[in-house]
Amino acid sequence: MAALLHGLSRLNRGLERLLNAILLALLLGFILLIIYQIVSRNLPLLPRLYWTEEFSRFAFQWLIMLGTAIGVYHADHFVLEAFPRGTRADLATRLIRDLACFAVGVIFIYYGKDFAISGLRRSATASGLPMIYVYSAFTVCGIFIVLYSLERLLHAALHGMNAMEAELNTPNELDELASADDTPLDASEQPRGPRS
Image 1: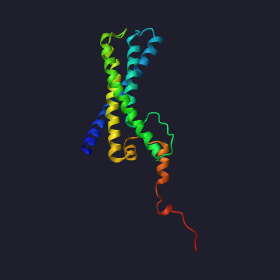
Image 2: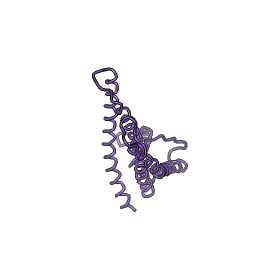
Image 3: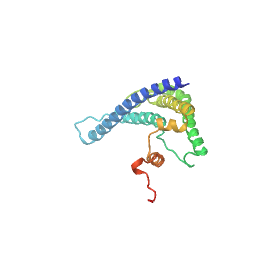
């Protein structure tokens, strides 16, 4: 089981690096296409390329879906803490959160596959690009969500929820404050008792 977690962790770290590079390229392309659209509207010497609007929209959709997968990996999505930190109810809700993310990933794969295939029969209006390249974003996102959620769940099962979150979650201010309250003071900071 530990070997499976180690292999999955290595795979996911490599996929995360790849996704970060893809997301950076998509963001750069998105920004350049939007800038070109703005400039071409105001400078008559530049041709108005209608496909730039489509491609910027497609890049934005892929940015959202791939960014969502990374957000699941590091628990950067919206989290509501309803119970005191460390209680059983809190641990249960954090486990349910990761199980729900896994379930959403499976749903994205299952239904996204048919949605992507429907893109074979459609093409973008201005560019003529087959829509499968856009519609497959849900399936790809689902695959990443399943892999990342599986690592989170496996890590929690082997090492506990707190160890998993310390390893994978993006640190936030509340966690840092809570850990600062728990750290023992060193000898120079120890409160001194009354002198006799």
